[in-house]
Structure formats: structure tokens, C-alpha cells
Image (cartoon, rainbow, N blue to C red):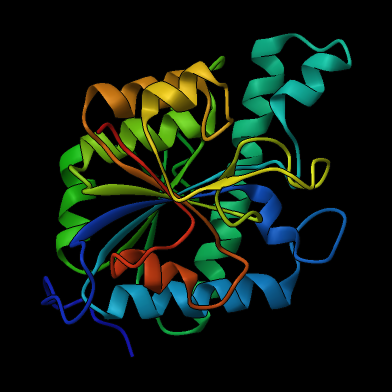
Length: 248
């Protein structure tokens, strides 16, 4: 059942409007490449739970499961060309996620920073906010529309523009660690962290541009494991999930 009849009231959760940043790799599930149907369908069901709880939900999705701009650059491609290919990979992921959500009855809009009018709306800030107010899930594709900027930066920028209260970064790791937990058994997970410390120690929460943008605009970030069912709802409810990054 869809809910496209106007702004819905908050039934649960701490936040009214959130920006969810998803890495493309999350869509791979147990596969080595592409999109695993079981994973994207589970994710869609959880996103619908969030939306139907009354939370206005916008999503920025990466494209690393298909193509990553830096990967192309490393192989000798021109950086701008490689980044544009990465942006188009995010459009493919956005359309796939839109399809998974719509098959479960949700109303969704894909908004692209690149003009691809046959499959996505162009980015217009006021229109995007109106979609949120009507209870529609937004999926922002193609990053910022510019090379040399990551989807992390796109997530931070869009969060400011739509006046989100928080950025939720859904990854395959349950927070931010002092070192790579896969390589260092003594790595410590932070419950809370300041932007300054994360930047100084290069802890990899987001890239430096995205982090600085959030810090300068007082936009908190929660890094959590989106592969664990229920973690997204817990994060939105304000529970202690993953790592909360904010200035003291």
C-alpha cells in the first residue's frame, strides 16, 4: 500500500528527515559483482518500513558494485571520463532500487544530477523537498554531476540542501574503527567520534571533503552496518548503533 497522499505524521523514531548513503557494494550481497536480488529486496522492505514510520527518506547510492571512477583512473583512464562512468553506474543502481521498492508498493522518485530525462527527474531542490513532504522516497543518482567528487560528498551536499537532520552511512561494517578490523584484531570501535579526530587520524568515515562539509554545517553522521536487519530503524530511533560522528 502506497502513501502518496501528503506528508505523513511521525509515528516512531528520533528524526523526521534523513539522508541515507548506501555504498554500491552493499547491493552485491554475497556476490562478487552487480546486484543480488535477495539483498536488494530485503533492503527495499526495510526502507519501506522506515518511510511508513513517518520518516522522510532520501537516499544517495554509490556505484562501486558496477564501476568505480578511481578504479578506471588506476588503469590509465582520464579521471573525468572514469568519474562520469561511475556516475552512470549509480544511475543503474538507483533504477534497480526504485524497481525493488515499487514492486513492494512504494512511491519512489529517482533524481539524477546528470540529465537522463527518460529514466530520472533532473535535480531541482524545491521539487525534491516537495516529494519528501508527500511521503515519497527519493533516490539521488549520479553524485553531484561533477567529476572529482565522490558520492560521499554528494550525500553531504544533498543532506544540506534538503535540510536533513542526519546522514546515515550504511556500510558492511558496524561503525568506525581505529584500524582495519579485518587486519588488526586489536582495532577499537568508536561509539562516538568528533569530525576533527576522524579527519586528523584519517579514519575513513567519509572522504575529507564530505567530512569537512558536514562538520562546517553541523550535520551529524551515523556509520552503521546496513546488512544487519533492523539496524537502520534503530539508528533512526536514536539508539546507540554503529558510530556517531559529530563535533563535541
